[in-house]
Amino acid sequence: MGRLFGTDGVRGIANEALTCERAMQIGRAAAAVLSNNRRSIPKVLIGMDTRLSSDMLANALCAGLCSVGADVVLLGVVPTPAVAYLVGKYKANAGIMISASHNPYEFNGIKIFNEDGFKLADEIEERIESIVLDGMPTLKLADAQNIGRVTYATNAIDDYIEHITSSSICSLDGMEIAIDCANGSASMSARKLFEGLGAKVHVLSDTPDGTNINDGCGSTHLEALREYVLEHGLCAGIAFDGDADRCLCIDDNGNDVDGDFIMAICALDLKERGKLRRNTVVGTIMTNFGFTKFCEKNDIRFIPTKVGDRYVLEEMLLEGYSLGGEQSGHVIFRDFATTGDGQLTAVQLLTHIKRSKMKLSELASVMTRYPQYIVNIKTTDEGKLAFYTDSDVKAILKNAEDKLRDTGRIVVRPSGTEPLIRVMTEGEDNALTESVAKETAEAISEKLSTY
Image: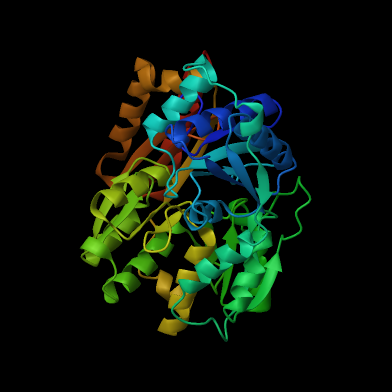
């Protein structure tokens, strides 16, 4: 994690940590680094979610980019993966998404994609950080006749929907589903996408007002969606987060179907169709132990990485793997996308349900979830750094590992996007799993409170 960029771009409370001035600086620096000293005029796409601050930050980014001679194409409100896809389609040098994903509306963020639609490599982010934070090297503003221009892509959503639709190998005729748009980016695309594929769609939380994004809805709040699916007897409920790059589901019995279950279901489908390249799925250290057992049972290789879909993708690119993702619902179908895409994930899952003629609850039974308990510890940046170096913290973790022994595991890590340290325990004994997580979190919290 860098000084400016976390695991998923730059994040902070809008107008406090993430100001117009900072956005303008990032725009200038990104244009300079990503243009690679080309003589042609750089073209940068900007998309955003529905947060109140997104317009403000988009305009600040535009000003920064244009001031150093880059042209800007504004996409409007679109999902994050739409930006990643449209960079290539529109032959741009970079794409920027303004979003703080699943966080409350007061937060916002800046994610940058390169000309191939991939999130930036660490070394590129470090070069941008050096310009923004250290002023090295000094950037030259464009001459009056070379200031960049701003245009608008009025077909951005339709182009993205057409792309996702093309990934489907059958219609969704006869399927009745509920979709929770989190009052975010999916509000612009989900109804048209899924109705276009033939499904009967009940759309929830699709009236964004700038402050209600992720507010009691979406992938972080599944309660209302669960109730709706059960009340109306639907075959599935689909929940997106604020920028629609993740997808979680509710099955026909009202049970959660998280990213691990989605990967298990889709891995078997891809394997049967000969499309699971190298017979491998990439996950993270937070992937449920039940998924590991699923892979062993079905002769599928599982590779865990650090938390963050960018690290999952990096591993996938090494050997050309076709499927990877996170428990949180970031699932990457590399045949169609360069990043996690909630709506693409939903299409792949729903078409498999349709083709298999099975219920989602039946498909999800291929994997057993091991009891898992997560406690979040609020901390500061200093506390995050101390987590790695403090000897007492290391002793606390060793004690937790000794308690779990061979019956489970513990993973403790600082969040890359929030001021939190996450404690996760997992194992066969639910009571032990919960007690170790709580005790460990309390001990670490007390220790790091001094920083």
